[in-house]
Image (cartoon, rainbow, N blue to C red; front, side, top):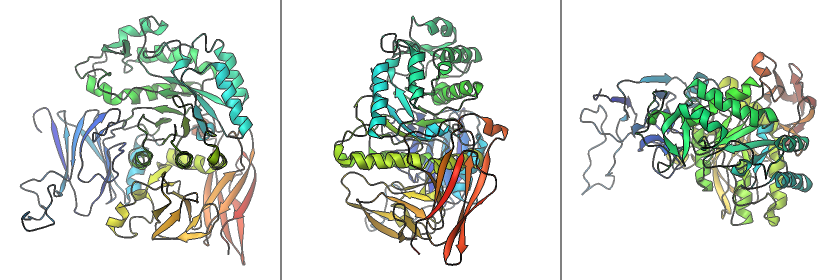
Length: 618
């Protein structure tokens, strides 16, 4: 103890790698980092990020959660103690080229600005097991509705109802898939701060607009930030429950108070959810310091400004999730700030940063801390960049084109239009596979997208120095698909394949195994584990409607027999939590010199037929 602060020290081995501490855009391996875990719009300062989750996982197979909603300071192997049992070697800078200004220490240190804290340790034996146990401890992962795993497009800020409907029709006419469309601040009569009411000029008949949209097989997601405009119908009701400071002249309701939550959710229900709105994009709950409340602010719940800052995005996610649960409808949306305990909440993080490599790095890091991230597509300088970004986003937790400012469309670059259409249709085809991956997230705690240290066969392939080269630019979706994004300007790239054989997703040909391979820019950089089964729908423009049945193609890759547990439920309600769900085992086995597909267990209620396809030549 240090007065009103608590100091924690954890042993750190010389060969031990540390991952986690939230959504990091700069690095995956955290050894050598000094962090201030602080909810913020990411601006390059270590630890200040959209989701500064105080959880880390070790390459030795354990995880640690410091259960505190405070700004935590962290030193990962940088604090050298006089009494350290395993100090770094003493070197002479004048004579030894191996001398380092920051030698590695044998401890990970955390400073908590509170007189005491709960610390939870999650066992392995593998890093994935530690993450899985952490996710289950916080309630399991979210299971989105089926439509949430389709493709989404956010229209320009001031679009009218007629323009949105015309845009949806253009997607359909050109053969591009679309499942939900996002309306930006212009849907409201006022924003920054918000009125939370439809603009009567742009959307004169909200119910009619939403009904017409749903008739085209598309749902609506509405942008909001939580700061309430003076003069709006909500302002007078929520003012008694607001903090001492404003954001853009709007009050900041304290949603730790049940009455405030009831007022706000009641308003959202009447003006959006009961009309058919499928979800929300929760913006501006992260920072910057220049427009959010200062740490001197006070709130009527008694929590201080620091605690509210660290948990505000988390609280609003819970508020919206509770509202949809009351309707027995699943939702899937976007949020700009989160923290520990978010895994069960149906929201995906995003931000205003726009580096493709950094987006992939954040996607890898998200898998260590129980949050989801989308490497959204907004605009590009060239058709090549457009295609590369699309190839990445279509293998992420939420496939989004965010055109609120740029006005770009999937067909904005005609030279790659057909390739973009193919990868977007592939996103829809992969839905049975993705949906099952999210079901495992929900029930088993296994992240649907995983960084390489959480992948079987990676920890023992090559040496540590080689493995570290591939920590931040390749990842695995589900158990079988390894995605190695190409970036604009790359004619080829290296991929480190874990142990075992891996095969090209498109052709079924063997690529390699347990080694570094080179792939060219003319390929879809996706590889499949030996013996894997990948269930696909046939190409289509919308996810199946409630009660609709669809055919399934099950692809088998490689030369080994394999099995796969396929998940199914109604895709829209919480009936699965009441036991209305099925797990069906799909198997491929040898039948003489040929392969044979077998279906075991209950028949999936949504599957009309199952056909096996054997991708790898004998």
